[in-house]
Amino acid sequence: MWGLYEWGAPLAFIPPMEPKLVAKPPEGEDSIHEIKLDGYRAQVVIDEPSVRIFTRRGLDWTSKYRDLAEAAKTLDVESAIIDGEIIVLNDAGLSDFGALRKATTRRQHDLYFVAFDLLHINGTICATWHWKTAARSWLASFRPKSGSSSARRCRARPRESRHSP
Image (cartoon, rainbow, N blue to C red; front, top):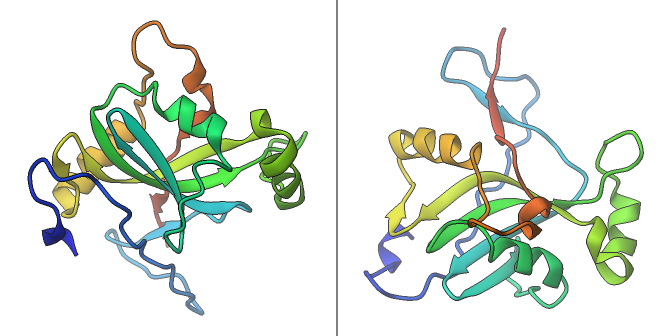
């Protein structure tokens, strides 16, 4: 899968890893788990000057998420593939799937993209643990381009956290 990209070739959707349901959380220092959000899994592909947003099955839904696509254009990157979840927050600050369905068609300004994995950044494929560690650090420090204020809806949040027994 990772060998598909040649230098200078346009970036494209990468099928995401699917979570695996287990009866008991894994143990040990190398164990990780993901936080479940009630939203739509999405992948933002930034390849200046374009931004596309794909569903977890690879459908291009950029037109449905036009405000998020515009916000992603303001991020200070030349190219990136960012895996995450599109959500709407309720009054308690929790993701609300019912409100998400309405916001997708009627209230675009309520949508948030919560980034939890960086697959590609400025020509570097983030496939190894070393790069994943660096990618998570980068995700935690997302910044809009200088002078831009519309990247507010692109929020970064680590997808995985260490599991303590």
